[in-house]
Image (tube, rainbow, N blue to C red):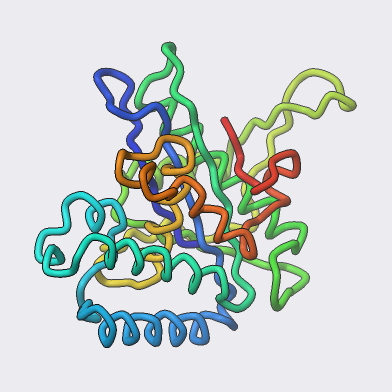
Length: 251
């Protein structure tokens, strides 16, 4: 499960109302096919717009702070992002879990971070355990978390959830909690520089479009970017939040 974020976990003088996490779950037997598709997409973007294969697709920066990519007109940069979303949505046997945390006055940076990450980790664990991801399936699936360079608090959180992971009982089981220790997720999360992997860049795009759905910037609002997240519908993990039309987990 590749994961990236949008927004920030800050609660004091933060410009964001939400903190969002998005993921792209890729089965190891589909990894090479997905990589080949991402490389082919990047070659098309190079041929059409001059985007070099080594240049990072970082969606937020491409819209408002493009740096060297300013040489590509902004409407073309938007076309790249939109096309990337469509390519991601057509990858074979992948799935995307998405979590949005609305910050509350009583929150701290730590509680926002923990609430978002523990939620996406638990949904990953549950979906693995029930073998509900598309594509190849084993009777004892295991998963690994690969994320953009993230605070090492994440490693501590995963280690804690392996030993102590209290989850509230569903109403029919009465009050209280169950200690649902992680069983299907192996190793500490692996932290990668997004410049070095197209998969993290793909998740960056998913997370950006997820955030723009709820709190779009002026440009994305103008061009209808609030609706772009819906382009990912074919791969959205609806089981993560069955009551939401796009499977977004709201916390």
